[in-house]
Length: 99
Image 1: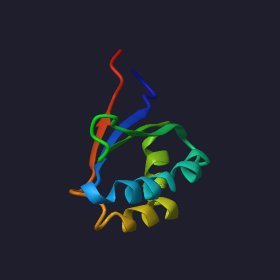
Image 2: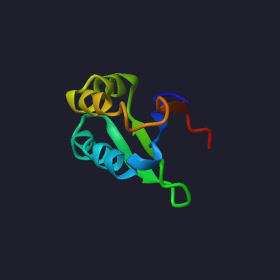
Image 3: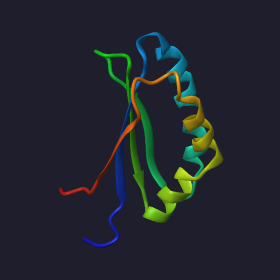
Image 4: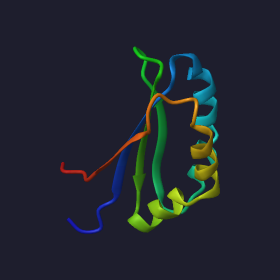
């Protein structure tokens, strides 16, 4: 397959007493990201059974578009706010669509 998009699943786990605070921080990034060049999908999910569990589902047109997102001021601002809100570093996984 040529010209494959980049798909990402990024899981972030809140400290039990910081769920609402983390949710507010993560929601800050949605709107500015939707305006970035190269974003196809950018959604934030919260696990219904385990509310500390947040997951971003992303799709980007290219590695270049993703790199621009990773260096964006709004993403850097949110990343700086995670300390004290999360139980571990975000678990970020990259995927290619097979079927």
